[in-house]
Length: 254
Ligand code: HEM
Image (tube, rainbow, N blue to C red; front, side):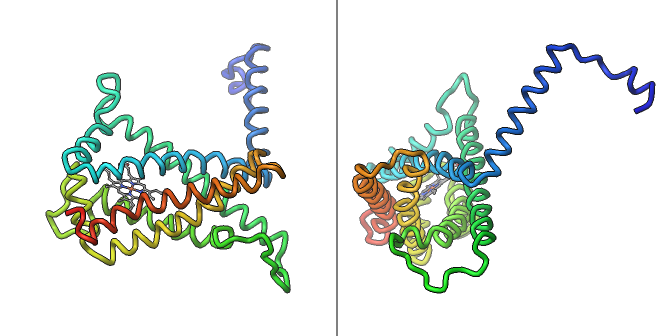
């Protein structure tokens, strides 16, 4: 460093230097938590819990379709107008979208890195793979998770953007009822949604249970109960979501 740059550098007071050290210490601690297996699992559990809450809220919102076009279309408008006048049109929705994007990003990155760490720790693999405690959900976490990621991209292009799965001019912004009926009248699309919801159900069946374990809520006494709770939640969410495409295919919602 030259004399002139040294001269232009502000002299740090003791207080500022201490603040800087504390910030650096906190960042280092966060980075070392993220670098550890347990840290990544906690990140997966916490972001998974946020996404789970969103999924429940979204499923309940979707069920408004059974109350008719006026209710569900008004609900879609409400989601954009909520918080007004403190928040502008659609602002809360953008906040929710940002939180979801961050959660999905962290969840997927942690899952990917944990998989790599797992493979590196056991490069050859077991000669006889004994999935004693493995359930369908636990065995399909990676494949199911990947299918869900593909589903979410398609889903956003479909019902939020209206750029896939519709005839030109068929998709109408905020006309959720008409869009859902038109979207699911294309049976391969409806079938894809039903299969994806199957993957979501399996993912949640194991994911919710894993979250309980990671957060230290599972004990010998409550293991069976927590597993049953996870399964029931996964099945309720599956039925809640698929009831919409099935009702359109069956002509009950049209
Ligand atoms: C049969 C199942 C589902 C149906 C019928 C459905 C329906 C819809 C509809 C109609 C919208 C647009 C709402 C609007 O513009 O007001 C939407 C948006 C969205 N859905 Fe779904 N959804 C389903 C499953 C899922 C699942 C499983 C997830 C996540 C795992 C999900 C995540 C989202 C997201 C992130 C948005 C965008 C919200 C926004 O930013 O506007 N959906 N969904």
